[in-house]
Image 1 (tube, rainbow, N blue to C red):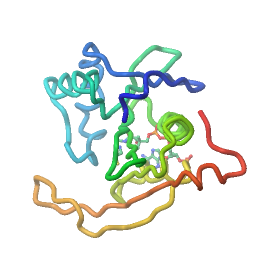
Image 2: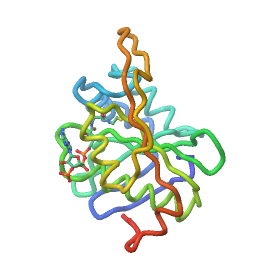
Image 3: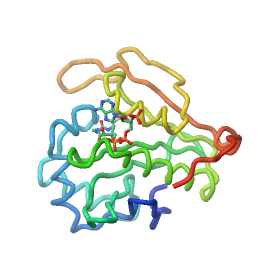
Length: 184
Ligand SMILES: CC(C)(COP(=O)(O)OP(=O)(O)OC[C@H]1O[C@@H](n2cnc3c(N)ncnc32)[C@H](O)[C@@H]1OP(=O)(O)O)[C@@H](O)C(=O)NCCC(=O)NCCS
């Protein structure tokens, strides 16, 4: 679970536990409707962002803070939590708009995949997104994850609309089988 990730460093990023004082920085990106357009829980108001920071600072975090090392700014988060069975995790991502398209999501996710397979000895890591969310499935592609399914009208939104969903996964044997294993 995310609780086992205390601290990961990549070339440009630090992945660390959330703290209660991260609430306002979380609101900066999770309060942005363009960032939360394809997030199932939608936009967070200030209180929601504080609750998100508080919960993930607690004993059972489901997301990890992503901090830009050069500026010290919290730029987004990685979801990382148990999936359905033992040895499986789900990974996800959100990066604030000023920091997008710099390769940060890919860089942070690579470090987490390395942690999942090399340290936690996970068997399988999954990720999902909507087909319209090209940036998200591009990250999955770049990580070498496989698209396993395209579910039609899979998620019912509060608005009454049904979202399609792509389902991606990567197995430990695929991760370790690569000529050049991915790393931070
Ligand atoms: C998805 C998201 C995390 C990607 O973050 P990022 O740090 O910008 O991603 P990267 O810079 O690592 O880019 C990964 C790839 O996606 C591409 N990409 C990024 N933004 C894109 C966009 N808006 N449209 C099309 N492609 C995009 C990049 O060009 C790159 O591919 P390339 O190397 O082939 O050019 C970010 O767009 C985001 O936070 N979106 C809102 C939250 C969200 O939808 N999360 C996923 C929910 S399933």
